[in-house]
Image (tube, rainbow, N blue to C red; front, side, top):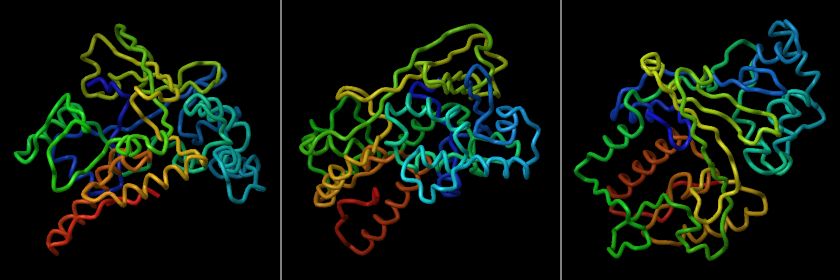
Length: 333
């Protein structure tokens, strides 16, 4: 039940993706309630009415808080061009500096002015006391863990699994390949390497309850790690029976060639390289590039499933029409 590659909560608004994943295991209801430490004080995330009142030492109503934050926000920024402008136009300088500036610099290794505004657009800002980190109607955790989910998916008689096998070493000819590895790796990095962030995890084993919450973000820049996740809290239905607890400190850094790639950086100066790789992919017959690595996008689990199902729909249509499968199913723009 330990999420060795960081915490993963399944959440979606796509009924089809939710129905699909539930075929392979029972999901328990789970709400992600993230805490954050900033400047020596504990807060709740995402930024909501409690966060605002805690931070400014006030007791504002939703209407008062909305007007208060509107005054803090930089209204001169009409179309935010980067992460920092998006934050300043949404919540103003104080909340931005407290919760996002240091954390973002640690997570991405870049100034927020160098990151796209879209990163922050995914995070909600609420003027009530709802501390549910996600807005999606379907949220849960697999009762037996994600390993069991994947194992059940792979039980199909139509699937053969080969472990310890490099894609480059395969000698067979296939009618069609669905490639979910890094798109630049497929082409032997001939145009250069696309940038990724990777993660290092420092395991903490202890008795009882280590931090009292599943996730606590450490927002201050002088703290080297970004967050601590305690995994017993991702399975509250069995947490009380566990005498031991496992937590991980999470450190972010630039991915080197031998590291596991986690987050595509998608810097502006990489756009030409990515566009050229996409052109190569579209011209490659018999191969579809899918998933986070194949399309070089940050994708949650539900979006990955949704796109795979849409690709299957297109395959069925093309096969029914006796048409050759195209090279690229999902537009990575």
